Length: 371
Image (cartoon, rainbow, N blue to C red; front, side, top):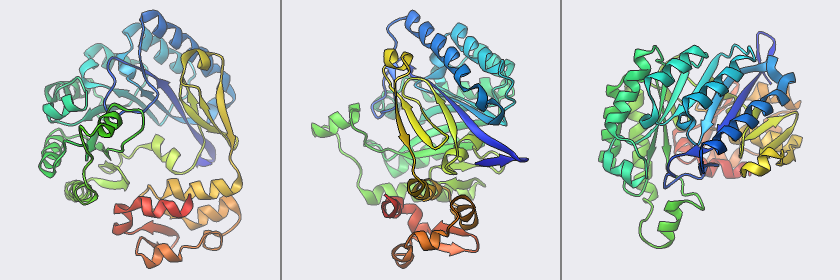
């Protein structure tokens, strides 16, 4: 468990599944709301469900409200949720809410400040309006610029922007353009994800029909290399496969996931990891309301593998000593790293096992050793 001044540190994730539109690439648990009453009912259940985790409240140090589109909620429901969380007196180190630029307004920013939200993650995906339409996003570059102005005017300066590269319409020139636009905005954090084709998405259907096609691996690798080099040159710390931050703005909540630590998940489709059990709530609302979820007890051997599967997402790798502390054995005895070393995908430096630059570019080849 992560410890802060001797205290156990856990994260709290709350899922808001509602969206106004469904993006072409998205496979997260989401839905278009039937009416306001459906959303009201969902927030009622979320507020009630939060209290089921009272015994963990003292250990919660980060909060993350994700989706879906959390700021698609009405001011009434948004304030109901934030007020409930505020009543828990958690004093989180980091409190993030995901937002879509087109819905962000001054009233929302004021509610964030009022209830202690100190970090906002904007789902931007691209700064190119034609590509936003292709991705079925419903904001524009101008909306992004306006949303950032609203946040900064309200002293919400800890901002992350999500971008996607290697979607079917992407090019190296477009990636460069998006990076240039991002850098103009003076934002401290960026999550730049390569598009992964997920089943049951609009894109997967279009690809199966031959209407669009994925980019080749070499082009995707060139884009990724451009992103890494450009952001590093501008002072951003590449601290996780897809995440870059100015020093001091690294995501605390996501570190809990990458460090294989415990977290509470609340909401339809949300996952949590508590007391050696990983659980995932049913994404169907009525089933979630009946507390239906899948439970998987994680064995010690599975934990060992996850330590590397998740830990290798971090650019500084994994700690040998921390592994020994957790599992009372050495990773050098438990796993055969010879193949990865010979392929120049990893290297060992003092206490840490790290990915090489080649390993960072070929993470799937590394991960398959632990599946």
